[in-house]
Length: 73
Image 1: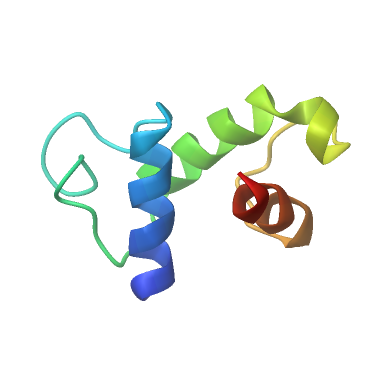
Image 2: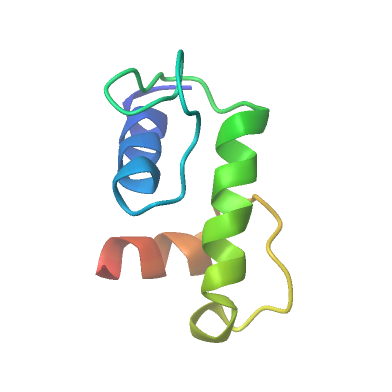
């Protein structure tokens, strides 16, 4: 939980990896909670960037590889 999760949701929403269409997590209604919707959006982001991340499948874990790529864009 925290502002870092809200920022993650904002970036995911802005780049087309939608956390939620409406309600909590939707664009303009991002939250500080990392739940299943955030994880699902993060997996979509990871799966779209498999080669850049050097992984074979998205996991929804916002670890060092994903953070590095996320911060570079």
